[in-house]
Image 1 (tube, rainbow, N blue to C red):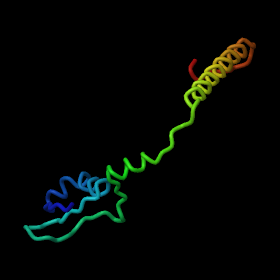
Image 2 (cartoon, rainbow, N blue to C red):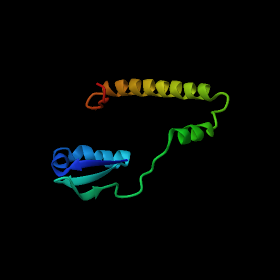
Image 3 (tube, rainbow, N blue to C red):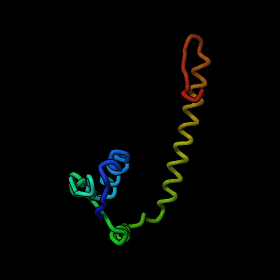
Length: 106
């Protein structure tokens, strides 16, 4: 898409225009006194993908196998247990005179 903007409007909204160029791939013709003086466009090729391409790519994904959810639950449970053991061990170390052990949450 190509838009026109005056040099004055460009100066007022340069950040917005640069974002539109970078993230949307837009092009701008800058005019001074109604005459084109410059074109602003993306510096390199823009990587655009259509919604149709996204849907096609998602359709090619393979789903996780049976038991995937159970595996995730087992991992989460194991991490929670490990955290609880670590926390208890830190509390035990805090009871040792002269030893300064601090847990980030304490």
